[in-house]
Figure 1 (cartoon, rainbow, N blue to C red):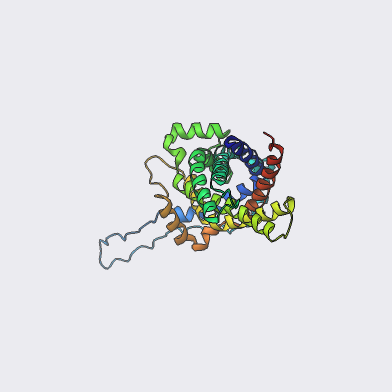
Figure 2: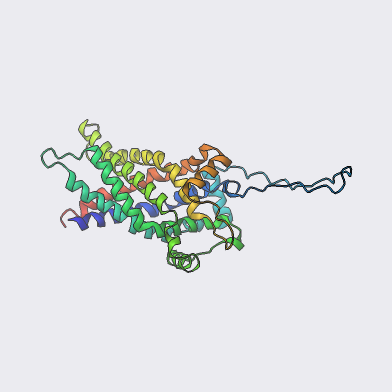
Length: 321
């Protein structure tokens, strides 16, 4: 019975992840806009000692840093990707998405289903909201640790196209990405940003799965709609909006920490999540933590709808197994 929940959740998650992959890629590119100014080291200029007190000081020509590139919206980012990299670039890193959903989402969906069955009151057939949130937090955290290597690979593969050709990592697939990271940066690099991944996954699973169940129950209890496609779509879109609002700030920081390039002998752009958050806010303002929100909700909404609508259909197909 427990294995069935993993299979159902895994199938639904892979279908949802692949169908909304372009939105996720656009979100990652938007989250990285303006990052170079945030991560750039501060240069301190010291005046040289004058050898002659009355000698006129020569004029110093300090190069003016170029202004930051203008912020581009999700449609503009999508058009730019297609123009510069081709339409297939919208599916960059899709092999990593498949692996990530197979590891991360299959685990979290299966564990949530097990806890839901265990913690549902047999007398009233109710699953209290706090139990839903707790189950989501636990399932999301475990799933994130399992899927973090695929998550790092996915972020890097999605972000690669924005770099000059000489700086691109040019991973051929998710397997190639994980292999190269392990060889050049060590096994530990596969869990870079894992604390952020775990925090985000706990938040997204708790807000997404718990709110879906809650919205669905409310719709059915108030008899606003019958238990069918309309109810599943409405509850899942509402759950997707809640998840997007809750997780976007963590997602921005996670994307930047996972994508940072480690140069030999050079200090890392960020010394962890808090440093990344502070540098981002200082350089770009607090609303930078909501960069990519439009593509996030554009992706999170359809993703959640496809996820739960597919899940409900898969459950019907597998109900006799």
